[in-house]
Amino acid sequence: MADRRTAQRRAAGRKNPALVFAALGDATRLSLVAKLCQGQPRSISQLTERSRLTRQAITKHLRVLESAGIVRGVRAGRESRFEFDPQPIEGIRQYLDFVSEQWDQALSRLKLFVEN
Image (cartoon, rainbow, N blue to C red; front, side, top):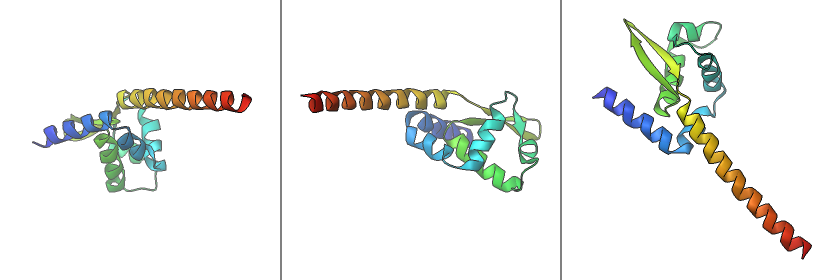
């Protein structure tokens, strides 16, 4: 049941850019994403190293990132390892490209209006 809820939250993060932006809107979570972007899954203990935060605090941040679909927890024996999922970030890039195109069109219309 919990796995299904996690999958549903992850899917919601992919469909809703606001969830991804909200998850990335925190310096600690951005730092965790940067660590996980290095390629290898990491345990909570590894992610807590050189941090002033507790394991519980890191876990809460990872759950937010997991709900947005940015990271996924993988069970490895008795420990969970977290890995980066680039798909939601790609979705955000596409969304930002779309917004950028809208702004370019609006600025072009404004330029034409001002020049006429």
